[in-house]
Image (cartoon, rainbow, N blue to C red):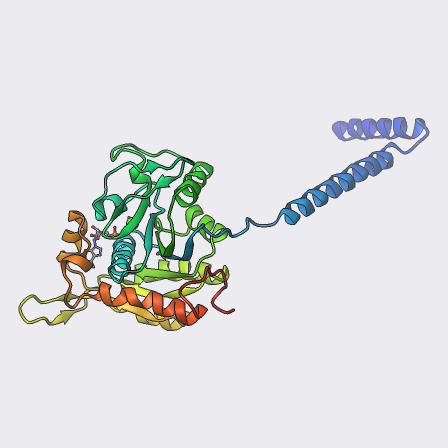
Length: 324
Ligand SMILES: Nc1ncnc2c1ncn2[C@@H]1O[C@H](COP(=O)(O)OP(=O)(O)OP(=O)(O)O)[C@@H](O)[C@H]1O
Ligand SMILES: [Mg+2]
């Protein structure tokens, strides 16, 4: 009770002071704060307008490169690099000018799979000359750092490294630049999509539900960003009995449904085959080491056919979304 009376007295004294000052302090305080808030809001609005005016990064083509094709998957270890390498080598085998960019800055696989281990030479204007094997011009972080060196970088450093790997390279004239991307839908993929005119994306997945689920999420991001999906490669689809050639599916067949859902073609079903991994490890892509009945060889034609269907030509730089 006593405490209540004392509190009341203090409140009244403060009120008295306010009123005795001849003006209503509390309302003047409110109006100053309101003015500040409005001016801050105005500043924020102006800043936002300036940022919006600058816009998103412009998609800038790479000099000399006609079509850029990304190989992506939400999931790791499903065969993106294997697909990228074999697609590029199969295209080169058809006498098409092709380059291969390893955009996996933290886990580059291209040097091993393409049997390349050399630092790129520089041109007079400081551009890197891409090391070449099997007719494919390659660029990878793996050429610039030693095999055991850990790359400990944060977002912006990765982006600027990627930009160098893309643009500070003397690619020459390329019909296709195949880009092997790291797993997931993180910064690297987003930055590639924002900065490059992409002709199309090849999605790679294995058929397990867990893999297809993650792939679905990645695919829906691509669709939201209006990136044309060329189709899906289902890797490790089945094993083939070495005696009777009977095919056994071991991980199910969930990819079919995803292809229907996304309304894109299922480009190929690649078997789980030790010839593929042994070839990759030996640096001789399986399209070269096993020519007969090779799904990768058959599949590599498809991106060209599809890009031709989508854009009407394989020889123009393209930046139109699929729906255009
Ligand atoms: N169809 C296949 N049959 C047998 N082995 C395969 C097959 N596809 C890929 N591999 C092997 O599986 C391993 C992973 O493949 P790869 O590196 O292409 O996957 P990735 O999706 O690029 O992985 P990461 O997400 O780590 O970049 C490699 O050793 C590769 O040789
Ligand atoms: Mg990889």
